[in-house]
Image (cartoon, rainbow, N blue to C red; front, top):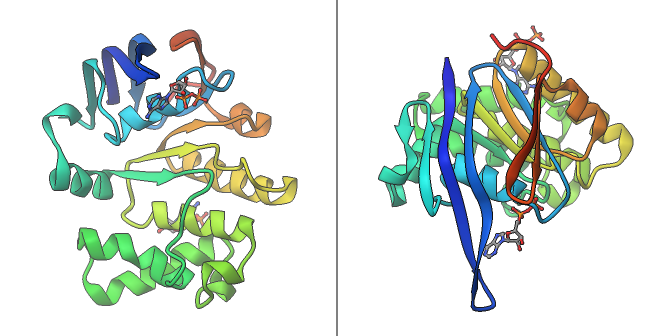
Length: 231
Ligand code: ADP
Ligand code: ADP
């Protein structure tokens, strides 16, 4: 079953007065349960590709369909609300809201989405924080915990609405090796649960844990290597 379909996708950016084609004719299916590592040199279109998958950005040409939804057809609040329920996003420098505790940060997406009754949201947020090893830090502010702990809180937040798809851009990029390893374990666990994961990473262990490696060079799919079958 396909969760992501890209059909002849192009993305142009206006840069210093000239139009630059950052993604060239990308056609790609991702199946439910795949863990796709997107690799390749920097400046080659990897983040742009992720932004198209989440609807943060739209293609210049072509179609992006996620979970049966054509993202270009949606905009504004509708798209934001769709994303909140369907996609968990983790960035390298993910900004947790600084005035909220880790617990409040994890509850927030559930308040926007409102799929769970209010009293169950806190309980779920606590479970997620436990899961990422942050039960003790739940009442702390982001500034009171380490970068790795913030990143793990950001992952817990991305999982709050139990998204079918988790998209991450260099999720271990600013972490030391030990913390990166614990984040890696979390993603491997999510993979084993059958979640669909798409992530840009330079971390070799993380790329090795993927079921599929997609190499992007000069805005094109340079290599597409599926090593394990998806669910
Ligand atoms: P990667 O993730 O592989 O490092 P990116 O997708 O971030 O590459 O960037 C690919 C190219 O697109 C770069 O030349 C970058 O400068 C350009 N680019 C990315 N986002 C924008 C934007 N919003 N406006 C203009 N140019 C952009
Ligand atoms: P176990 O590894 O103990 O079998 P499960 O995989 O059954 O745990 O997950 C228990 C709960 O924790 C579920 O509600 C699940 O959504 C949540 N969960 C599982 N993995 C993670 C994770 N990596 N991060 C956050 N929550 C998770």
